[in-house]
Image 1: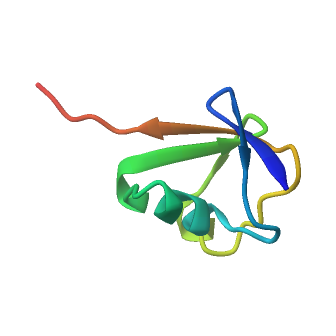
Image 2: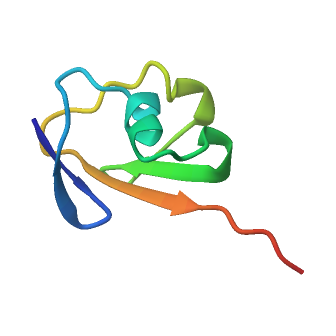
Image 3: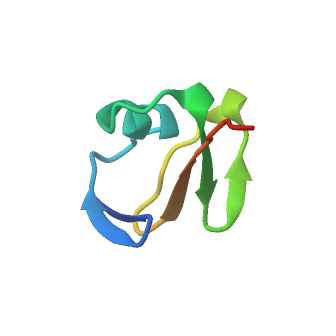
Length: 66
């Protein structure tokens, strides 16, 4: 199925979760914020939230600094 990630069209397996997607990108779940269709997905739902065809995801990396 196809989804849009940070403005780019991507193909992923059906029934993929947010955790599956982040793992494919080698991203640590604790270091990113994921929005799907403009709704922030809580970290505790990454394992259970199923991504749907043509969902629009924004993956934002957290950066520390001072």
